[in-house]
Length: 487
Image (tube, rainbow, N blue to C red):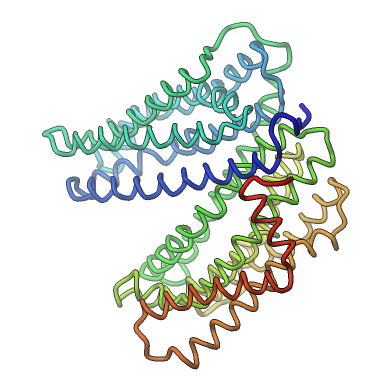
């Protein structure tokens, strides 16, 4: 399907996608955090532990598998009844064995871990997986029409419905069922919402070869997600081995602060790739426009954010965490440094997948993961911050290689591509240098909260001031794009 500018402009699609994805991310995180705080006051840690243990495998299917299924359907691009039936059946062939395993393994794992609640929770989570293929198909039908607003409304409703159910049970004699009820009600809310929106029901008749084609696309997409998750968990495990449990805790705290900045800025952009590329597939000029717009927008919003976090890491930690977490600051600074690679490194796998280069994306992800973990294991480091930088260094090299492969596919010149990122990089660098100098000379001894507020305000003035002076047209283009004005 080619891109029809008469129906929906690329600028408007990007604006709507970024706006609604950002609203979705902010609402989901804030509402989820409030619900967690309420439930945490009423439930014992053992209940949360039982849910976490029960959900390890289920979440891998319910979250990563579900969206990989949606992406596979969007990538294939056939939405007739028989093709959608084939997608449902093929995805059910993946989800059903996992559901059966969780139902049967729950009591066994409960006995092995001496956690009786797992024996009840895990089978429930397993049965919920049977809805995943249906949801994948309905997700694809919604995103086929670039339904970012619909997705946001769906997530808001399901978050609130699940939270109300969980909190209600938490204040009752059935408190141990609060967290499973939250998940059940949330899932059912999504099912009902999406069915009312799409009206789609699975059938028996399929198109010949469609099941095999869906699985051929689905498995690499799913494996890329699995590699990314495994890489994160391997890093945490190795931190625990090389350092100690307290350092792992500091690392997780730094990661949570960084994620609170990453998710609203980066997640909305990640969610644009497949829906937009599915609309412009086969139109090389439009594919280039989507690629360039997303990457430059990522540079525009992430480079100043994480440059600023590098400079204000000490004040941010002092303001947000107790003094016992002072060791988080250098780790947070290292995490922020690696996040400066977002426009070059982070989008390569999903961009490859969105362009139909699934095998290349899988091979790329495997090589990057093995090299980064290998560097962490082999190269000795004395501090957690150094370990993070060592682990991430190979990713920058592979990021450039991945960029070259994508630019070749899109027939884009590397010089033009990187010059398109230069305005944000130069402005962020100027911002960081000036704010650091002002902090060191004029804000010594100032209270952390005031220094943080002044630094953030000064940083914004310098960043946008620099762009206004030296890259005004580039900045206006980015702002117009985000506002849905122009192409």
